Length: 131
Image 1 (cartoon, one colour):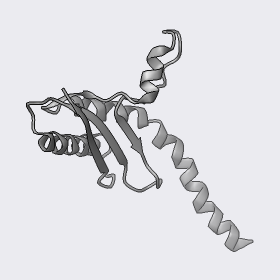
Image 2: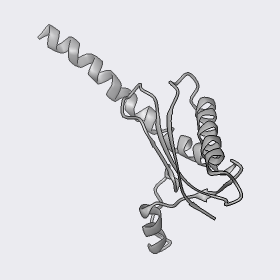
Image 3: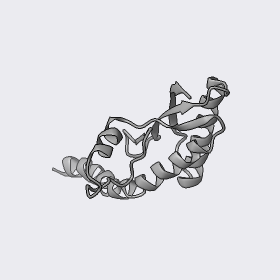
Image 4: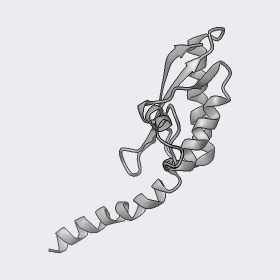
């Protein structure tokens, strides 16, 4: 029982840490979304299916906090790096590769400011269209 108890107590510790990491998640998503929209050449963040369906709902329907169109922020391991997926529509006059690199760098910088001391995030940028 002692071995089993010692093995379960560390697993209880990450679950006690899980709620604090979820609490600032909404702030991180909003911060990342703001950083992405400031990158030259980004027209807008691409709305996902959930965002499109949400616009069809009545205005009185609650909006889930911590979500932003085109931004997905996950952390598969409790202490591992953030996995960030960004979907943007770029302006035609900008080179797509420059926009994608700028978005990636802006996301890494913003997460470094908002969550200092965290491992470097894994950022995936997809340019879904041109405007």
